[in-house]
Image 1 (cartoon, rainbow, N blue to C red):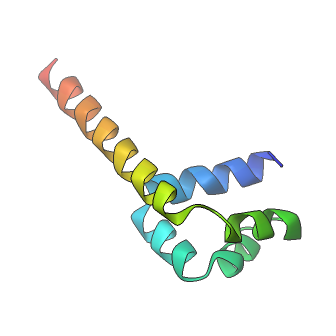
Image 2: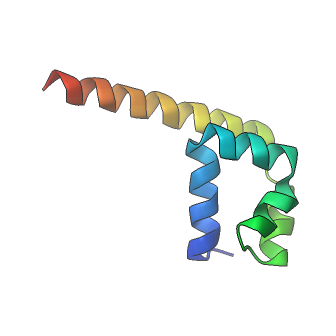
Image 3: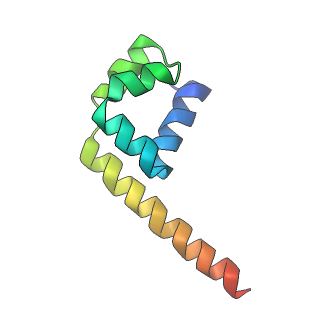
Length: 73
């Protein structure tokens, strides 16, 4: 279950706070709106929400560090 559309949706909810908030409020609805298949929507309904939030925070810290390093060059 690794279609480009599915992976793009996951990437978006990992890095976009608004998309993640909307997804967490209505996982199936957001998946359907994104054009994902029924099995993909079902899989997303069972996502580890704590893991999603922890990963999102980790990615944000990495982006922030990278941004600060780029600004110093």
